[in-house]
Amino acid sequence: MMYIQVAKRSGTVVFQAIFNNMDIAVKQLLPSQCNSLLIVTDFMREIRLAATLEHPNIVGFIGLAWTEGASLADLSLLTEFMPNVLEDGEHEQEQQRTGSGELPSPTTPLATPMSSIRSTLSGHYQSSRHRMRRELLEQGTSKASLAAEVADALAYLHSFEPTVSTSRCLVDVLILRFCNCQVIHRDLKSKNILLSRTWNARLNDFGYSRVTNPDDLMTMNVGTIAWIAPEVLTGGRYTEQADIYSFGVLLSELDTLQVPYIELTREYIDEHHHELSSDLHHPKVKAKAKSLSNAYIAMSVAEGRLSPSFTNLIPHELLVLARECLSHAPQNRPTAIELSYRLRSFILGV
Image (cartoon, rainbow, N blue to C red; front, side, top):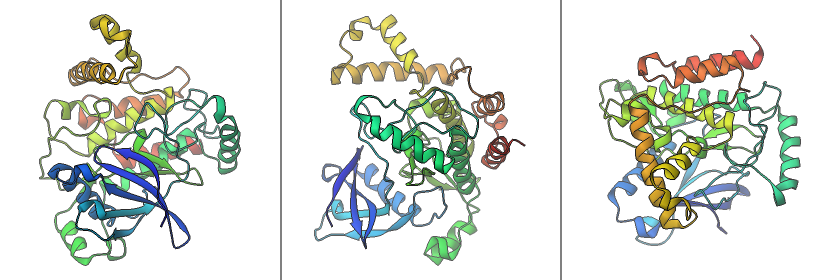
Protein backbone atom coordinates (compact mmCIF):
# COMPACT_ATOMS: atom_id res chain seq x y z
CA MET A 1 0.00 0.00 0.00
CA MET A 2 1.15 3.56 -0.71
CA TYR A 3 0.61 5.89 2.24
CA ILE A 4 -0.12 9.64 2.10
CA GLN A 5 -0.04 11.46 5.42
CA VAL A 6 -3.27 13.42 6.00
CA ALA A 7 -3.22 14.22 9.72
CA LYS A 8 -0.94 14.30 12.72
CA ARG A 9 -2.14 14.62 16.27
CA SER A 10 -0.76 14.17 19.73
CA GLY A 11 0.78 10.71 19.73
CA THR A 12 -0.66 9.47 16.43
CA VAL A 13 -0.45 9.99 12.69
CA VAL A 14 -3.08 9.23 10.01
CA PHE A 15 -2.38 8.18 6.43
CA GLN A 16 -4.56 7.68 3.38
CA ALA A 17 -4.06 4.30 1.70
CA ILE A 18 -5.77 1.95 -0.73
CA PHE A 19 -6.97 -1.47 0.39
CA ASN A 20 -8.94 -3.79 -1.91
CA ASN A 21 -9.43 -0.89 -4.34
CA MET A 22 -10.93 1.21 -1.54
CA ASP A 23 -9.59 4.39 0.09
CA ILE A 24 -9.01 3.84 3.79
CA ALA A 25 -7.53 5.76 6.71
CA VAL A 26 -4.56 4.17 8.50
CA LYS A 27 -3.92 5.42 12.03
CA GLN A 28 -0.65 4.59 13.79
CA LEU A 29 1.24 5.55 16.90
CA LEU A 30 4.14 7.92 16.37
CA PRO A 31 7.37 5.96 17.00
CA SER A 32 8.42 8.58 19.54
CA GLN A 33 5.27 7.91 21.59
CA CYS A 34 5.37 4.13 21.75
CA ASN A 35 6.83 4.25 25.26
CA SER A 36 4.08 6.50 26.57
CA LEU A 37 1.74 4.31 28.62
CA LEU A 38 -1.08 6.88 28.46
CA ILE A 39 -0.95 7.31 24.68
CA VAL A 40 -0.59 3.58 24.00
CA THR A 41 -3.50 2.81 26.35
CA ASP A 42 -5.72 5.39 24.64
CA PHE A 43 -4.85 3.97 21.21
CA MET A 44 -5.61 0.40 22.27
CA ARG A 45 -8.89 1.52 23.80
CA GLU A 46 -9.78 3.36 20.60
CA ILE A 47 -9.10 0.22 18.55
CA ARG A 48 -11.30 -1.98 20.71
CA LEU A 49 -14.12 0.56 20.81
CA ALA A 50 -13.97 1.21 17.06
CA ALA A 51 -14.37 -2.51 16.46
CA THR A 52 -17.51 -2.47 18.60
CA LEU A 53 -19.33 0.50 17.13
CA GLU A 54 -21.47 0.47 13.99
CA HIS A 55 -23.58 3.49 13.05
CA PRO A 56 -24.03 5.52 9.83
CA ASN A 57 -22.76 8.66 11.57
CA ILE A 58 -19.65 7.10 13.09
CA VAL A 59 -16.52 6.51 11.01
CA GLY A 60 -16.61 2.81 10.11
CA PHE A 61 -14.11 0.25 11.39
CA ILE A 62 -12.37 -1.86 8.73
CA GLY A 63 -9.78 -3.80 10.66
CA LEU A 64 -6.26 -3.94 12.05
CA ALA A 65 -2.90 -4.35 10.37
CA TRP A 66 0.47 -5.33 11.74
CA THR A 67 3.49 -4.84 9.52
CA GLU A 68 6.78 -6.61 10.08
CA GLY A 69 8.53 -5.33 13.17
CA ALA A 70 8.49 -5.51 16.93
CA SER A 71 7.37 -1.94 17.61
CA LEU A 72 3.86 -0.80 18.51
CA ALA A 73 4.31 1.72 15.71
CA ASP A 74 3.78 -1.22 13.34
CA LEU A 75 0.18 -1.62 14.57
CA SER A 76 -2.45 0.21 12.50
CA LEU A 77 -6.15 0.97 12.96
CA LEU A 78 -7.92 0.85 9.59
CA THR A 79 -11.11 2.86 9.13
CA GLU A 80 -13.19 4.45 6.39
CA PHE A 81 -11.48 7.35 4.70
CA MET A 82 -13.31 10.67 4.68
CA PRO A 83 -12.17 12.28 1.41
CA ASN A 84 -12.78 15.97 2.02
CA VAL A 85 -9.79 16.82 4.16
CA LEU A 86 -7.45 19.78 3.94
CA GLU A 87 -4.36 20.49 6.02
CA ASP A 88 -4.31 23.82 7.82
CA GLY A 89 -1.21 25.37 9.31
CA GLU A 90 -2.74 26.82 12.45
CA HIS A 91 -4.45 23.62 13.65
CA GLU A 92 -3.10 20.11 13.67
CA GLN A 93 -5.74 18.84 11.23
CA GLU A 94 -8.13 21.72 10.58
CA GLN A 95 -10.71 21.05 7.94
CA GLN A 96 -11.58 24.13 5.91
CA ARG A 97 -14.95 25.71 5.38
CA THR A 98 -16.75 28.78 4.15
CA GLY A 99 -20.20 30.09 4.86
CA SER A 100 -22.66 32.79 5.75
CA GLY A 101 -21.98 32.70 9.48
CA GLU A 102 -25.45 31.54 10.48
CA LEU A 103 -27.11 28.31 11.47
CA PRO A 104 -29.56 28.48 8.60
CA SER A 105 -32.83 27.03 7.55
CA PRO A 106 -32.56 23.33 6.66
CA THR A 107 -32.44 24.06 2.93
CA THR A 108 -29.42 26.37 3.19
CA PRO A 109 -26.20 24.39 2.79
CA LEU A 110 -23.52 24.27 5.42
CA ALA A 111 -20.83 26.15 3.57
CA THR A 112 -17.91 23.98 4.45
CA PRO A 113 -15.73 21.63 2.50
CA MET A 114 -13.32 19.28 4.14
CA SER A 115 -13.89 17.36 7.28
CA SER A 116 -14.78 19.79 10.01
CA ILE A 117 -16.82 22.80 10.77
CA ARG A 118 -14.47 25.74 11.12
CA SER A 119 -12.19 28.19 9.14
CA THR A 120 -13.02 30.23 6.04
CA LEU A 121 -12.01 29.31 2.51
CA SER A 122 -10.58 32.01 0.26
CA GLY A 123 -8.06 32.65 -2.48
CA HIS A 124 -6.84 29.50 -4.21
CA TYR A 125 -9.67 27.45 -2.69
CA GLN A 126 -12.23 29.05 -5.04
CA SER A 127 -12.61 25.98 -7.26
CA SER A 128 -13.14 23.75 -4.21
CA ARG A 129 -15.64 26.26 -2.92
CA HIS A 130 -17.81 26.13 -6.03
CA ARG A 131 -17.62 22.33 -6.18
CA MET A 132 -18.56 22.09 -2.53
CA ARG A 133 -21.55 24.40 -2.84
CA ARG A 134 -22.86 22.41 -5.80
CA GLU A 135 -22.44 19.08 -4.01
CA LEU A 136 -24.02 20.34 -0.78
CA LEU A 137 -27.04 21.62 -2.66
CA GLU A 138 -27.35 18.29 -4.46
CA GLN A 139 -27.14 16.36 -1.19
CA GLY A 140 -29.44 18.71 0.74
CA THR A 141 -26.83 19.14 3.46
CA SER A 142 -27.25 21.97 5.97
CA LYS A 143 -25.73 22.97 9.26
CA ALA A 144 -28.88 21.75 10.97
CA SER A 145 -28.72 18.38 9.22
CA LEU A 146 -25.08 17.90 10.24
CA ALA A 147 -25.93 18.80 13.83
CA ALA A 148 -28.79 16.27 13.74
CA GLU A 149 -26.44 13.56 12.45
CA VAL A 150 -23.99 14.22 15.27
CA ALA A 151 -26.89 14.05 17.72
CA ASP A 152 -27.92 10.70 16.20
CA ALA A 153 -24.38 9.39 16.78
CA LEU A 154 -24.44 10.59 20.41
CA ALA A 155 -27.85 9.01 20.99
CA TYR A 156 -26.41 5.71 19.72
CA LEU A 157 -23.37 5.98 22.00
CA HIS A 158 -25.30 7.02 25.10
CA SER A 159 -27.77 4.13 24.74
CA PHE A 160 -25.25 1.67 23.40
CA GLU A 161 -26.37 -1.98 23.18
CA PRO A 162 -24.11 -4.00 20.89
CA THR A 163 -25.10 -7.06 18.93
CA VAL A 164 -22.88 -9.94 17.91
CA SER A 165 -22.70 -8.58 14.35
CA THR A 166 -21.70 -5.09 15.45
CA SER A 167 -19.19 -6.07 18.11
CA ARG A 168 -17.45 -8.84 16.11
CA CYS A 169 -16.85 -10.44 19.49
CA LEU A 170 -19.37 -12.33 21.64
CA VAL A 171 -17.28 -11.73 24.77
CA ASP A 172 -17.53 -7.95 24.26
CA VAL A 173 -21.30 -8.23 23.87
CA LEU A 174 -21.69 -10.15 27.13
CA ILE A 175 -19.45 -7.77 29.05
CA LEU A 176 -21.13 -4.62 27.75
CA ARG A 177 -24.67 -5.94 28.26
CA PHE A 178 -23.91 -7.23 31.74
CA CYS A 179 -22.62 -3.87 32.95
CA ASN A 180 -25.50 -1.85 31.42
CA CYS A 181 -22.89 0.21 29.63
CA GLN A 182 -22.93 3.36 27.58
CA VAL A 183 -20.20 5.14 25.66
CA ILE A 184 -19.17 8.69 26.47
CA HIS A 185 -17.10 10.35 23.76
CA ARG A 186 -15.40 12.95 26.01
CA ASP A 187 -13.79 14.92 23.18
CA LEU A 188 -16.67 16.11 21.02
CA LYS A 189 -15.65 19.10 18.87
CA SER A 190 -15.63 20.11 15.22
CA LYS A 191 -12.18 18.65 14.56
CA ASN A 192 -13.50 15.21 15.51
CA ILE A 193 -16.47 15.35 13.15
CA LEU A 194 -15.56 14.31 9.64
CA LEU A 195 -17.56 14.70 6.45
CA SER A 196 -18.09 11.78 4.09
CA ARG A 197 -18.02 11.84 0.30
CA THR A 198 -21.77 12.54 0.42
CA TRP A 199 -21.32 15.32 3.02
CA ASN A 200 -22.71 13.37 5.95
CA ALA A 201 -21.28 13.89 9.43
CA ARG A 202 -19.21 11.06 10.90
CA LEU A 203 -18.07 11.12 14.51
CA ASN A 204 -14.42 10.15 14.90
CA ASP A 205 -11.50 9.90 17.33
CA PHE A 206 -12.48 7.73 20.28
CA GLY A 207 -9.11 7.83 22.02
CA TYR A 208 -10.56 9.60 25.05
CA SER A 209 -13.86 7.72 25.00
CA ARG A 210 -14.96 5.41 27.78
CA VAL A 211 -17.39 2.54 28.06
CA THR A 212 -19.03 3.12 31.42
CA ASN A 213 -22.03 2.25 33.54
CA PRO A 214 -24.11 4.39 35.92
CA ASP A 215 -21.96 3.44 38.92
CA ASP A 216 -18.65 4.48 37.37
CA LEU A 217 -17.01 7.65 38.61
CA MET A 218 -15.03 9.47 35.92
CA THR A 219 -13.49 12.79 36.86
CA MET A 220 -10.37 12.87 34.67
CA ASN A 221 -10.05 16.25 32.99
CA VAL A 222 -9.79 15.24 29.32
CA GLY A 223 -10.82 16.88 26.11
CA THR A 224 -10.11 20.43 24.96
CA ILE A 225 -10.71 23.36 27.31
CA ALA A 226 -13.33 25.25 25.28
CA TRP A 227 -15.51 22.13 24.96
CA ILE A 228 -15.20 20.79 28.53
CA ALA A 229 -18.30 20.97 30.75
CA PRO A 230 -18.10 23.08 33.92
CA GLU A 231 -18.68 20.12 36.26
CA VAL A 232 -15.71 18.32 34.73
CA LEU A 233 -13.50 21.39 35.11
CA THR A 234 -14.30 21.44 38.83
CA GLY A 235 -13.62 17.72 39.32
CA GLY A 236 -17.23 16.57 39.31
CA ARG A 237 -18.59 13.34 37.92
CA TYR A 238 -18.13 12.83 34.18
CA THR A 239 -21.42 11.63 32.66
CA GLU A 240 -23.00 11.64 29.23
CA GLN A 241 -24.26 15.15 30.00
CA ALA A 242 -20.69 16.40 29.53
CA ASP A 243 -20.99 15.30 25.88
CA ILE A 244 -24.21 17.31 25.64
CA TYR A 245 -22.40 20.42 26.87
CA SER A 246 -19.73 19.86 24.20
CA PHE A 247 -22.53 19.56 21.63
CA GLY A 248 -23.74 23.02 22.68
CA VAL A 249 -20.25 24.38 22.01
CA LEU A 250 -20.33 22.63 18.63
CA LEU A 251 -23.57 24.46 17.77
CA SER A 252 -21.74 27.72 18.54
CA GLU A 253 -18.99 26.70 16.12
CA LEU A 254 -21.56 25.96 13.42
CA ASP A 255 -23.24 29.30 14.00
CA THR A 256 -20.23 31.63 14.32
CA LEU A 257 -17.74 29.74 12.13
CA GLN A 258 -15.10 30.53 14.74
CA VAL A 259 -13.05 28.79 17.38
CA PRO A 260 -14.93 29.20 20.70
CA TYR A 261 -13.77 32.21 22.74
CA ILE A 262 -11.28 33.30 20.06
CA GLU A 263 -12.06 36.99 20.57
CA LEU A 264 -11.88 36.58 24.33
CA THR A 265 -8.45 35.01 23.98
CA ARG A 266 -7.18 38.00 22.00
CA GLU A 267 -8.71 40.47 24.45
CA TYR A 268 -7.25 38.61 27.42
CA ILE A 269 -3.76 38.63 25.95
CA ASP A 270 -4.01 42.33 25.04
CA GLU A 271 -5.26 43.27 28.52
CA HIS A 272 -3.17 41.04 30.77
CA HIS A 273 -0.12 40.10 28.71
CA HIS A 274 0.35 42.88 26.20
CA GLU A 275 3.99 41.93 25.81
CA LEU A 276 2.87 38.79 23.97
CA SER A 277 0.38 40.39 21.58
CA SER A 278 2.96 41.83 19.19
CA ASP A 279 4.54 38.46 18.47
CA LEU A 280 1.69 35.96 18.66
CA HIS A 281 2.74 34.29 15.43
CA HIS A 282 5.89 32.93 17.07
CA PRO A 283 5.29 29.26 18.10
CA LYS A 284 6.65 29.66 21.64
CA VAL A 285 4.73 32.87 22.24
CA LYS A 286 1.58 31.32 20.74
CA ALA A 287 1.88 28.32 23.06
CA LYS A 288 2.31 30.55 26.13
CA ALA A 289 -0.60 32.76 25.11
CA LYS A 290 -2.82 29.70 24.61
CA SER A 291 -1.87 28.32 28.01
CA LEU A 292 -2.63 31.60 29.77
CA SER A 293 -5.97 32.12 28.00
CA ASN A 294 -7.01 28.49 28.50
CA ALA A 295 -6.56 28.81 32.25
CA TYR A 296 -8.68 31.96 32.26
CA ILE A 297 -11.38 30.35 30.10
CA ALA A 298 -11.48 27.21 32.28
CA MET A 299 -11.89 29.23 35.47
CA SER A 300 -14.60 31.45 33.95
CA VAL A 301 -16.59 28.50 32.54
CA ALA A 302 -16.31 26.54 35.79
CA GLU A 303 -17.68 29.50 37.74
CA GLY A 304 -20.57 29.99 35.31
CA ARG A 305 -19.34 33.41 34.15
CA LEU A 306 -18.66 32.41 30.56
CA SER A 307 -20.33 30.41 27.79
CA PRO A 308 -19.94 30.29 23.99
CA SER A 309 -21.46 33.08 21.93
CA PHE A 310 -23.95 32.98 19.04
CA THR A 311 -24.82 35.35 16.22
CA ASN A 312 -28.17 37.08 15.87
CA LEU A 313 -28.82 35.00 12.73
CA ILE A 314 -29.32 31.65 14.46
CA PRO A 315 -32.99 30.53 14.44
CA HIS A 316 -34.65 30.97 17.81
CA GLU A 317 -35.48 27.26 18.25
CA LEU A 318 -31.85 26.30 17.77
CA LEU A 319 -30.58 29.03 20.08
CA VAL A 320 -32.90 27.80 22.82
CA LEU A 321 -31.68 24.24 22.28
CA ALA A 322 -28.04 25.34 22.33
CA ARG A 323 -28.53 27.28 25.57
CA GLU A 324 -30.12 24.22 27.17
CA CYS A 325 -27.12 22.12 26.15
CA LEU A 326 -24.81 24.72 27.73
CA SER A 327 -26.68 24.83 31.01
CA HIS A 328 -24.31 25.05 33.96
CA ALA A 329 -26.33 22.34 35.75
CA PRO A 330 -25.92 18.94 34.01
CA GLN A 331 -29.43 17.80 34.96
CA ASN A 332 -30.93 20.69 32.99
CA ARG A 333 -29.40 19.61 29.70
CA PRO A 334 -31.41 17.56 27.18
CA THR A 335 -30.54 13.96 26.39
CA ALA A 336 -28.97 13.02 23.07
CA ILE A 337 -32.23 11.38 21.98
CA GLU A 338 -34.10 14.59 22.72
CA LEU A 339 -31.49 16.56 20.78
CA SER A 340 -31.95 14.33 17.78
CA TYR A 341 -35.74 14.58 17.92
CA ARG A 342 -35.80 18.37 18.24
CA LEU A 343 -33.27 18.91 15.48
CA ARG A 344 -35.12 16.55 13.14
CA SER A 345 -38.38 18.35 13.97
CA PHE A 346 -36.75 21.68 13.14
CA ILE A 347 -35.48 20.37 9.81
CA LEU A 348 -38.93 19.03 8.90
CA GLY A 349 -40.61 22.24 10.07
CA VAL A 350 -42.75 20.38 12.60
